[in-house]
Structure formats: C-alpha cells, structure tokens
Image (cartoon, rainbow, N blue to C red; front, side, top):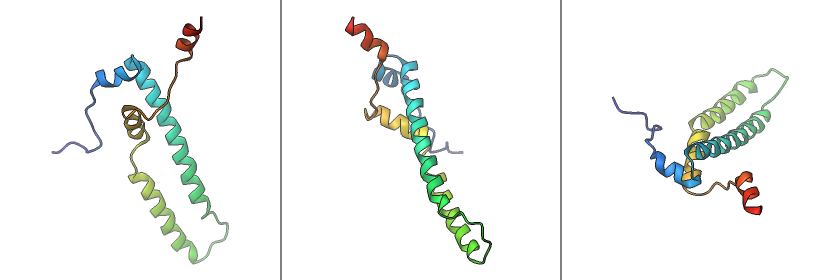
Length: 106
C-alpha cells in the first residue's frame, strides 16, 4: 500500500534553521496557514454567494452543479498547512520577532 502523496517527511533541522528555533518556525507556519485558510474561505464564500437564491426553479439544478464543481475545486487544492510550509521553506514568508527587535534597540 502506497503512502498518501500529501505526506512528506520534513527535515526538522532545516525548518528550525529558518528562524533559529523549531517551535518558532512551526508557529510562523501555523500563522501563515491561518492567513491562507482565511483567504481561501473568503474567496470560496464569495464565489458561492453568487448562487444564493430564495427562488426555487428548474435552473437551480444547474446552479447546484456549478456550486458542486466550485466546491470540488477547492477540496482538491493543497491544504493551507502544506502551502504555508512550502512558502516558509522557500523563504517567501516574512516574519519578525518583536522581542528581538526590542533587545537590539536597547
């Protein structure tokens, strides 16, 4: 039985070296994943709101098929955590540590 293609073994040392601390890196990735998830949810809701109707008619069946296709498209997209991890490892995520900035100012 083959492993799920979405499961990737990560080198924790490489993740940790990006921020100097593994837990800090994981926190940054999780915050970015929340941003991505929120954006995706808002985008999906905007697309589905176009189909919102209080009138029942024969066209509703066709509209429901379009809604289903849009929903399936979003289900097939990579998960926010995967996207956030990829962005972080490629150096595409900007982060700063206010405590470190405060320490350097003093």
